[in-house]
Length: 279
Ligand code: AG3
Image (cartoon, rainbow, N blue to C red; front, side):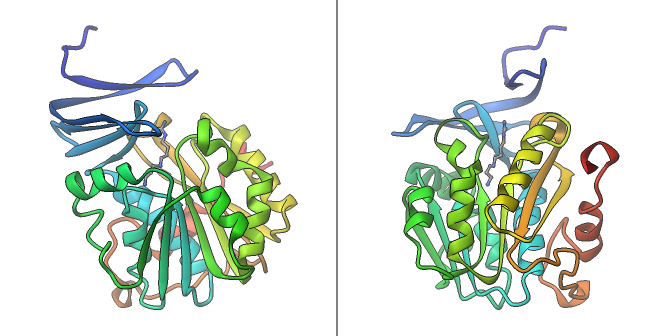
């Protein structure tokens, strides 16, 4: 089959498969000091942001990822107040974190300021909470930030990174998780995006092992659909300092803020592991 020209394609590295989104126009293209940032107006998924040719967000499906990167971790903590987001320059995770009333500080440390500036322009919904007085936008290296952080200064750390290549590779390392462990309070929760269960099960195993080896008592991987990421199926791996990740808080859905994917049953279900991931 030949595709006509107005298709954006991300080839899924090493998988012999790809995703294509038909677009009406290209709205933005720049080379920042760190990466190439492109924005497309697609025909059916709203706007699309890519970094170095990899799909980061689309208007249509980012809610699943952003809600699952934030709410399970925040509900796994008994009373999260201080939250650190590493990466996440499009601000979608930050917006979800700020839905929790108890949060007093939501600090985002993104390496590339241009990602946030471009998101502010093309994804205003994701950036809708950037002016919340509890939000702090820092443009800095997340690895160095956590290494310098005051011990026990955060309740939840969320690693909203790109794939484990280039500058993001260090965000999947045991040395980094050790620093996260130190920066977290005694009931602290760490969560990182951990790629596709189907394509990257080996990476998930290594993330789990590194989190355990860095001192966390309990580790659990959640999975959820993400149709524009490799394989269409994605994961996040959580770690808890005191353990008990299965005993998360379950607000009644009518007492919770508005979500489109997350609820307590989804949280529970996302923790159930397919046979091939269990060992
Ligand atoms: N988080 C990106 C996950 C990696 C996607 N990988 C890919 N398309 N090959 C993106 C940031 C969303 N806030």
